[in-house]
Image (cartoon, rainbow, N blue to C red; front, side):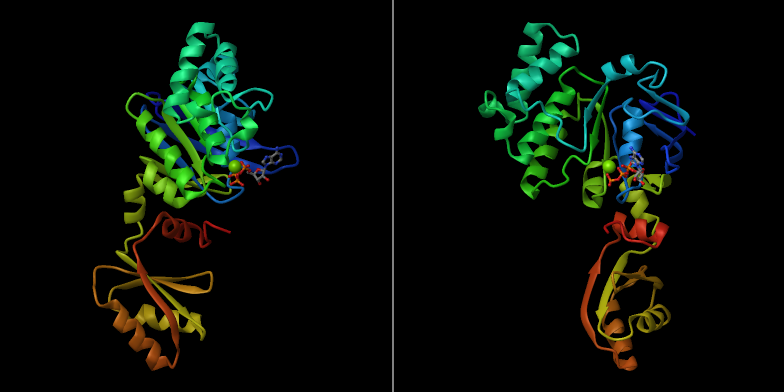
Length: 317
Ligand SMILES: Nc1ncnc2c1ncn2[C@@H]1O[C@H](COP(=O)(O)OP(=O)(O)OP(=O)(O)O)[C@@H](O)[C@H]1O
Ligand SMILES: [Mg+2]
């Protein structure tokens, strides 16, 4: 049940869009002060709609949401002062320079000119944009634009920062740069609510993750606990040109410690608990069946494994 001590508190929060799509279905969740909380789910899961309701952009059709103790539907203007938003699409003002995007945001949120100027300069340094301060935003790379949106979102000192797919479309280096800076914010910065379909990002950067699919939360815990819930220590991935489904059955029965198998993108994922020396057994069983194994690898359970366990589908589409 949602906790009144939390920074974000959703109780049976729902959104049905005109036309009937139930994008968010009776969501209950609590996010605690200082947490990095991740909403992980595939396209269309309802992540942006959830973030939209919490940031007053989308009006819920059911339930309730409090952010920093403020009911976002009853008091949207007050709630907006307490939140910072980095939306999924670029919303920088293209008629302004990099610095002006921060400065005017500060003025809009009631900061005086002196404070807004000082805060803008401070954030330009912190977000490694100082050398671009006077350029038009059109001159920024995707990664820089994303950093500027994050800087703008925290300009007015919000309690909660919402990041919707902040690194989608960024190259690996830009992703790392953004997370480096967000990491520096962690001690004194806002609570972070992240939505992503990137399981590595959720795993690496979130204290807790809610796995969302088709408007519902299927599981919520620390990444470590979610992965442990799979029960297996290793996942053996087997690629074969032969009868994969048949081989999967034989592996489940024949491999010591095998718990279950799944077909993922045409490959067999065999979950195994508590034993070593699995690969020779896999090869021997395939040989017995006259099936050629073309590739074989061993990985640890990931949040993707958790998602597949819960839904039978892959996170990526
Ligand atoms: N304005 C809208 N009107 C009608 N349906 C909508 C609207 N916005 C979203 N939806 C639908 O609601 C569902 C959830 O969409 P949402 O954008 O919240 O998902 P998401 O998890 O953010 O997906 P993505 O990973 O693609 O960003 C989808 O089925 C989508 O088509
Ligand atoms: Mg989205």
